[in-house]
Length: 480
Image 1: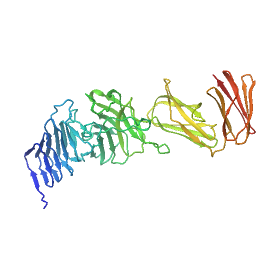
Image 2 (image 1 turned 30 degrees about the vertical axis):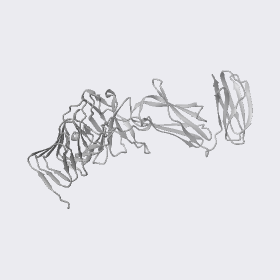
Image 3 (image 1 turned 135 degrees about the vertical axis):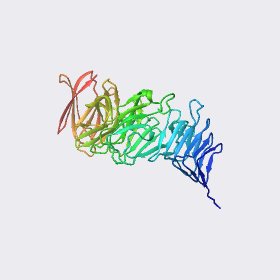
Image 4 (image 1 turned 90 degrees about the vertical axis):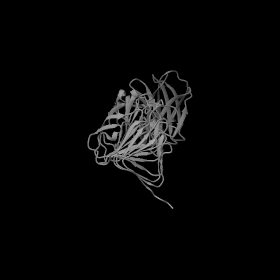
């Protein structure tokens, strides 16, 4: 026969050692101003119901060993105290969670960490955190206490919030009221970079704000706090002096752009372990504000959001987008018929230093048939260059453009001739004074063929002409 008990703790202090408090099926009620103290290795395991009245206190104390809150059912605390003497260096004693908890009053942190692991602390509309410090941090680890390895988070709900809401460590001022029932979440794991920076990760802290109004507005981040100090436990390898705030954004430019991390102008106050910054003033498509810290030497955003080439009649349209640019002089556009031999076909000026999406385009008026390959060479003002990935445009269903491309291939002079199948083409090579050095008539069996030119030419400037029934094309060619 199952029996339920009602246990009431009145105005007294109840201290528990060793095995801890295991509530299997009882209703445990803590009256106002009562104190439940769990000492040293005493844990709280709740498989029944625990009700904590306003003003009641549950205290985890004692040195050396971890304590935990577990069981099948959520505990709703009023005040929760963590005061575990730190006799280890560095401090590494936890009150860790095996179950979600609710705190309607205050989490008082003195010594010892609140380790969320993979669980939630819900502060609701009234709960707050007080006294968090380097020796008493909110963190999320795995069982081996690796910082950032847990996915737990802590959240609060407020009406039109501002300031350091619920003591979560993000002090902000919204440009307009965020609305009732705005949710503020603090996470304790690293977030992954986007695009070409997926190998980079943020510090072990991030904040997400879901406005109750349903629309995002810019906020001024007065203080984004972190724990630096000895060992920089939250920084995940980032140098404190190089910290930079990043915001996850998605913009509308006539089409839906990718979601990516946008770097924000940031001021670091290392002596007090915080940065200040702002979120974007531009409208974003996301219904939340998500910010974290990376660094200038280990950034989170992409360089190229997109890079594409499309057939457009007898021309190819090349487009690309960047999320941000630093010291960017511009882009050299390169084309190839075989993805091995490249020629420069144009240059587009960059925008120097910007933290917003930039869109570029270039038209190739003489694409190869049927496939043209493209890449971008991004050039900094200091002369450094960076190659993009390779893309192609397959235009076999487009009208054929008669054209050619000449190049040297391991000492062999070759011409790639593009034209109409079964048509005849005259190939003429002259020197700078008009002397004909090479003449050949060829009939194309395919729309594009590579022709070896059996002649030896010294370094100098030459002119190549292709003559067909429909067109005459001449181009200079320099042999170095």
